[in-house]
Length: 77
View (cartoon, helix red, strand yellow):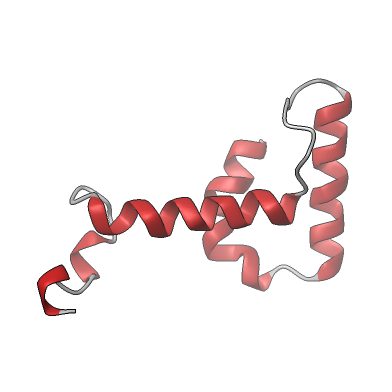
């Protein structure tokens, strides 16, 4: 479930209000407590930021990425 939340997070995170983010943090804490998730030093906001960074880093270098075709050519920047 956490993987699905994080997969969609770069697109939907801007629409989440503080109540949504608190519920996701509570869910993450439960996952950690039940040992379903191992990384203890992150909150949901940090995980989402990491996913966004990964998306924006990988997209320009991966010609198989679904959004690659809409990016400007590297030579024209």
